[in-house]
Image (tube, rainbow, N blue to C red):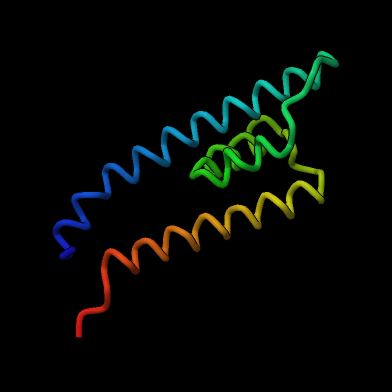
Length: 102
């Protein structure tokens, strides 16, 4: 794949991250509301998997704006690990699609 073809994929990647982030933000908001009402909660594993699946920007925004899951150290460590894993996977895919030109 050449650089022009790779650049053509950027809008699709942005759409993927945007959609996944919106879904993740909504999941955090639903969990926050459930926590406030004492209702059944969204499992942390679900929130983390949504973040890992390209939704971590939405999860980060929810942590900041909704002040949800922002003080639980064990969750935050797992969250940032999922961010690193997502970014590493994205970098690996980019490296496969755009091998170094000699």
